[in-house]
Length: 389
Image (tube, rainbow, N blue to C red):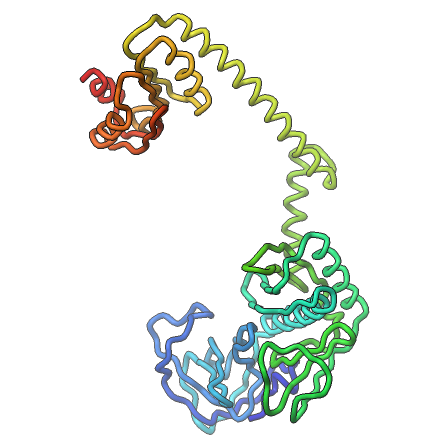
């Protein structure tokens, strides 16, 4: 079989001669979203331009005649096309690759080579994972990278794009005597992808002819992953789409804040600072009101407070103020429909036992020793009756 995706990766359409077709018995992911309960068929071709899923790169989609190709996979040296309709053995059909999908994969796979080669040179680290999803591409490396590292890697990767370097593909009957990246030991014919001085790697994926076609390499984010780092990559049309969405968001925020687009971050930071200052002022005012209210309370065996809206800090303020002159203080924040959050302290009750009984009786949960806290699904009347008993 002539694997056109290797020899002619820019093939979009071709004549497909069917050499075998049988009902598929394997379970296939419904990547195209059209399987339903219908049968699918494993089809072999004399030559194919459909790339089978391999090495982190997803398979191609498309059509062979009117039959939709929803998966392509390898079994040894054989390539099977999972089709929605049976095809005649010996029949020749017009085949068409979903080119937008393929080109996107070529852009990202080429970008992965550039970035992996740069990280190997700068940090001596290996690419230990590569996966293409509909949202982004993830790259895993066995080294911890920081923000400065990512900026440098991204700059160098885009430098390679701007140089518009040729991407060379060569085949070797045995392992060549120069260094190349590979995740495993190889035998037989070895396919080597070389991107100028940036990367040399054994790879079976599809790639661009020049680095300039990548368009733009953007490391959207990164995180610590296992003992190394995971990078989230966008390039080409995906990077352009991402930029447009974020630019529209910044423009909307800029209009709402009446600020310039490049100043929105500082403006929002100031809004947060102002909000925090107002929250402090509001809390101080609420403390003053609570202090004034609790000053009027006389000594008693117990005080039960019910209010609709109380923060945890405000509930604690009630507890602090009243626990000095009251044996048992219970503060409930909420209402009869949504339930109540509670905070309870007592010098006379066995609090853990009391809370356990209340939770069991009134569908509550929570606990504690000095000050118990939790929530309960009961009415005010039920709670007051429980305390009275």
